[in-house]
Each structure stands twice: as C-alpha cells, then as structure tokens.
Image (cartoon, rainbow, N blue to C red):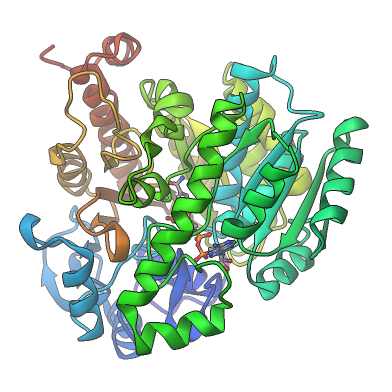
Length: 536
Ligand code: NAD
C-alpha cells in the first residue's frame, strides 16, 4: 500500500485525493472552476480548506454533510453509512431560474457542481473523451457503415469538455474542424496533443480539412474565430459537413457563450457593465449559429445537439431548433436501457501500473462487451494520464459490480498498490433527469420526472456507498436538470465487498427499471435478466 495517509482511513483518503484531483484538472483553478464556465468543486477557498480538514479528521462511522460546496457538519451515522453526503444547486421548482441562481451565487450561497466537479468525480478529459468517442462511433455505426474515415466533423468550443472533440474524432477515424474563439484554449489543446494543428485562416483550415478527407487521414484542425461568424462563412462557401455538433457553453449566456465580434476579455467587461446587453448579444449570435446547423441539417448533414442547451437558447429567437435531435435519445439511450454507461475508476495510489492491471482484468473478464474491446486498446494508446491515473469504460448492469468486486479482491491480495475508487458520470442510466438531454422524448412522457435520480441517490446512500450527491442545474441550467452521483472505494476489505455489491447493483438497477418503466422492451429484458424483483 502506498504511503502518505493523511486521513483516518483509506476511504476518506481516497475521497480527499479525488477532491484534489478534480481541482488539479480545473480550467480556472484560482476560482475553483473545473469546467463548463462555472462548474466548481468547492464553494470558495475557505469552504475548501474546511472540507480538507474535515475529511482528514473524519472517522469511518461518521458522515460529512456538504451543501453546495460548503461543509456544514459531521454526523455520527454508523459504519454502514456514506462518509460524505452532498446536495448541490437544488432550488425549489418555482425559484429554479438562472436569475435567482446567479443572485444566490453572487452572494456566496450556492454553487453549481456540473455533473462530476461538485462531487469530486472528475477524471480529467478522459471521461468526456470517451463519451464523445462513444457518440461518434454510434453516429458512424448508424450513418456511415461504422466508419468515420474520410468524414468531416464540424464543431465549436475547445473548453474543458469540448476540448475532447478533436481527439475523439481522430480516435474514431474522422477529420474534425473545431472553431474556438479563445487562442489560449487552442494552444492548450495543441500542447496536450488533443489537437493536431491550428490556424486563424478559414481558407487554410478548409484546405487542410479537404486534403485529410480526400486521403481518409484522421485529423483535427483548430480554427480561431467565433462560431457565429465562421459557420455562416463555411455555409456560404458551400461546405456541407458530414457531421455537425457544438460544444460552446451556450447553456450560459452570462458566463459562457461569447457573442460575435467580441473577445473573451470584452465579454468580461460587458458582463460587469451591462449584463442584459450581453445576454441579448449572445442570443442573437446563437440564433445565427443555429441557423447554420439547421441549414446543414436540411442539406443532409448528421446534426445533433451535444447537451449544451443551444437549441433551447435558439428557440427563444423563434428558430425551430428542436428539429435537431439530442445525442442521447438518438445514439446513447439504447445503451442506457441495458445499464451500459460511463463507469470509471481511479487509482488512489497514483500509480499507472494499477490502471494497467485493471485494463487487463477488464479485457479478460468482459470479452463479450464490444465497447470495452474497442475502447481499452485505444485508451491505452491515446489517453495521457494526468493527476490520479484513471480509466473510463462503458460497462453494463451487473458488469460494473463484477469488476469492482474483482478489483477489491486484487487490492486485498496486494496485486494493486492502493485502493481504487469507482464512480460514473451523472449522464448514465440511473443518474439523471434532464428533459432536454438525457430524458428528452421518453416514450411515456416522463421526461421531467426527477423522482428517478432522487431514488437512485437514496438507494445508493442506503446501500452504504462512500459518497452520494444530489445535484441540480445551476447557471443557465438552473431548472433544467436533477442528477445523482455515487462513489465507492474498493479498499480491499470485506465491508467494501458488501458496499460495492449493494450500491452498484442499486445504481444501474434503478436505471434499467426507469427505462423499463418508461416502456423500453430492451430495458425490461435487462431487468428480467438481472433477477431483481420488479413490479412491471
Ligand atoms: P468551457 O466553458 O470550458 O469551454 C467552452 C469553450 O467555448 C471556451 O473555450 C470558449 O472560448 C468557447 N466559446 C465560447 N463561445 C464561443 C463561440 N461563440 N464560438 C467559438 N467558441 C466559443 O465549457 P465546456 O466544459 O467545454 O462545456 C461546453 C458545453 O458543452 C457546456 O454547455 C456543457 O454543459 C456542454 N457539455 C455537455 C455534455 C453532455 O451532456 N454531453 C458534456 C460536456 C459538455
């Protein structure tokens, strides 16, 4: 076992390392902002210091309670209770608006945690890299005979999440043309190897893209500029991409989307001077941006929203933006119906050898899962580990429990150098209600019912998961979503076996039941195969 225990046990220490790891990946570390413009890992620096101290003093039979990134207290709950419980960004329905959220945020009373920042489950860009790759592969399977080679993907935004798009496209074999307004973000993606090359010339970018498409060479090109200005230019030049999506922070008009003809610095100034004008300009630019997406949709391109709320923003300007499908319903939901989703694990030891060991374990034990067989070798080749070594891989209901138990056994035997934390994205079968994304167009119309993620959190907490969080949307997402996060620490003990068995079974079990309840036959079959009691 690695040294350096600062807490009273490895479960607490692992959670502390996950908090530090999340902040280690922050896009704006001084403000504790990890990604998506405003998604934070702690309310403020004082709250962070208190959280770190509380974790280091926490006993195994206590629970630390955190409200929107601020530690509130410690309760004597018993050895089978979670170590950490969180509720983040939750507002009573009628008050769950962006305006009210921003007001509370300015007064230091609330924090938005994104999906994985607020509950310390972020693993760096590998998570979004895998999710974006998974989506592009599903697009290729459905529209291009499973092959993205020689296909042009046009998108925008190279931020904390969007920065994964160029590499994900290359991994899937395609050519990515990514418009980004901030030169520093382009430089960061070039430095990390996520982006192959960049230019500020539309003509040069197009020449490179056409050449790579013609030779079917995987490629990624960063194009400096504003999507609301560059996309109309591309359209007017007669370009019709094969695939179009977007990852500008369109969900947030105040802290995210940069309107046309403005630099990020000018936006910061306007935000202070005239926030209403900033919102008006952003809405105007988004309308121009989405007008292009719709034109490309009509011209035969595969266009989908990747969950940044850009359709809802454009609809305010009267555009029929919801003709563009959401990626989850179109490409991912069939996987969720089997509990297949973004499961992930982190080596608390900090040693990449632990991740290599688990990679081998996964390949050996899940040969029938084609997502695993395709992804793990690619991840080994392309993913550069940063911070705590981690791996994401899409595993189904039952598979996740099996893997975590195998790993816990390996920790017990001393095959691994330290404990391993298991967690997942909130974008998962059981984790989320978001009527414009994960739960859009449910067959029974239950899109906005948030009972499901709340039940998920209650169940995993009742099963003794190490950390359980209930999140709602903040910033531009206020009122749009409810989600739940869960973390389990495999520390090699028999108690961890029990927690893993109960909590991971519950986590995806309630997920497949949610889809079965909504009317999906594949989900009903998954529930029947699971052996769980279900009142159909
Ligand atoms: P971010 O704030 O870290 O980065 C956004 C990037 O977009 C920045 O680099 C910014 O300079 C650039 N940008 C802003 N306006 C632009 C414009 N008009 N033209 C070109 N570039 C522009 O945000 P992020 O973490 O990368 O997330 C992006 C969006 O994607 C968010 O809305 C997020 O919620 C969404 N998202 C959804 C999912 C999902 O559910 N699948 C996953 C990840 C991200």
